[in-house]
Amino acid sequence: MKKTTAILVEDNVLALEMLHQEIIDNFKEIEIIGTAKSVVEAAKLLRAKTPDILFLDIMLGDGTGFDILEIFPELTSKIIFVTASDAHAIKAFKFSAIDYILKPYSDTDLANAITKAHSQIQPENEQLSVLKQVITKPNTTLEKISLHTSEKIIVVNISEIIRCKADNNYTTFYFKDNSKILVSKTLKFYADLLKEVGFLRVHQSHLINTKYIKEFIKSDGGYLMLTNNANVPVSVRKKAEVLEVLNSF
Image (cartoon, rainbow, N blue to C red; front, side, top):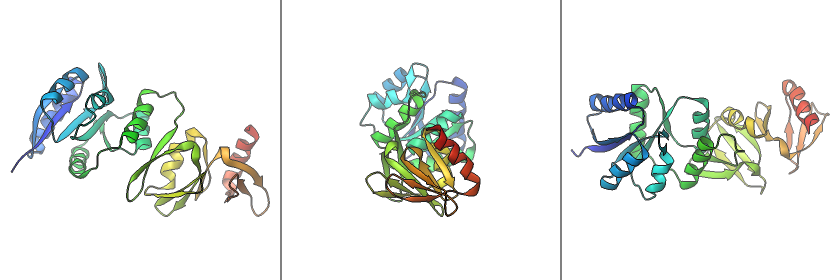
């Protein structure tokens, strides 16, 4: 049986050795055909060999994993992104809807990533752009987010999202142009992700972009009227927070 080939790109020598040994010991179907500790080394390797799987660290001593992808825009290797387990990196991957493994990772994490790599669709350039922006420019205002539907991944402008509504374990996004998208993640996932960019969870089932609030109606228990004339209920426990946000405008 033909083995799956892999190249490992990791600038931490100890982490590189551990990943190398982990694959040799536990994944006999994978043949490691090269390792690199920098963008320059990785570029030299990839000019000579194209692996089935590329294990790619994000932050390298002489640049980033994105630099390698820009050097090889037609790269056909399946990519397993490897990153340090910090909150900023996790947020970046969530915004871009791209899979990753966090260092230090477990045997299960690695096995799941390899299984996914065999069947995954390559990330779109727009997804990679979102990931790159969040990783390399942490202080800039985020403009886009990748939404994972049952059929595809769609990159949208955050400013065009009016509200989100819970639908069991799914979330429906409503947009300025009256379109909507059903996404295969929970409302809590997006409430946590978008709270830093002007979104407020006003009810167990509702998350709104505060820039689209038109008015707060006090009758009927309290609800928000949005600029697209949608009515969104405000829960009792969220009312004080909503009023505080409105008073800050």
